[in-house]
Image (cartoon, rainbow, N blue to C red; front, side, top):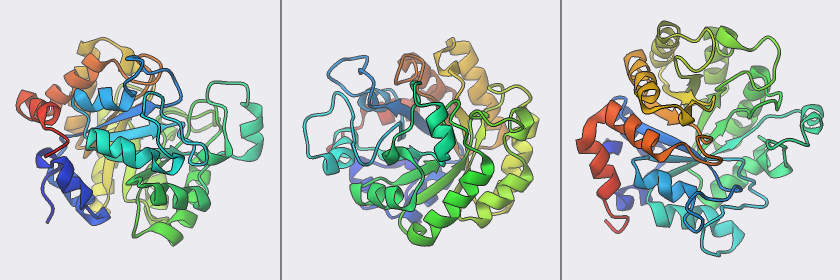
Length: 308
């Protein structure tokens, strides 16, 4: 059995297998924090990546949003060969790295090609992109959708099944939505149901993503708790996500969401990427960490050198 993620150092993670990561997360009993970051925006510290900032205030898992595996850009990162982008970020942060891939239909991509979330070929949830991500050193792929991109649960299931057939033993595969992602009829409590959980698991998901209680209309702590218990009965982990810009709310709101997610029983707590453009408010990342695991584990994560 792997060490708890709470206790892991950078050198531990360098040798981890997929099974080790899943065991380490489960063993931490709801005290793993994932922070979503955008690399194509200007970092708020200019020459330090948003991912490094998130790691410095308590993140265990860095989830790169809008990361194009064909044209990888993380602003603030030292210049490296494109194929080495993820490995360089892992070297600098000592953290587990995941990326979002989106099962966006071509028509939906065209309809939103003038927005911040405009799709590119290297962000789509294809087998080829997942293989490239794995070769670049990515530890986890999350199949999900950005605002307005028209990602349906059915599209997630189809992409997940295809990627599982090729990479089940290599990549941690997570699936779900933080909000409706522009799909009529999949808002509120219809974002995810037990039927969706079953389909994601049957298609190969290791982790089920659900909106955090209090982030989407109709998504209560009780509703999320029931789905998490159901996923755990089926043998998979869960991640609750703040994907509604509440990562830029006040600290008290963050603490309340954190405790509701803890009461709901989630394994991983996710905080989104748009407090400032590209990262949650750093004080909110730290407040979330303290709420779910106290200052002991928060300061330990913040203080441990990547050279350990």
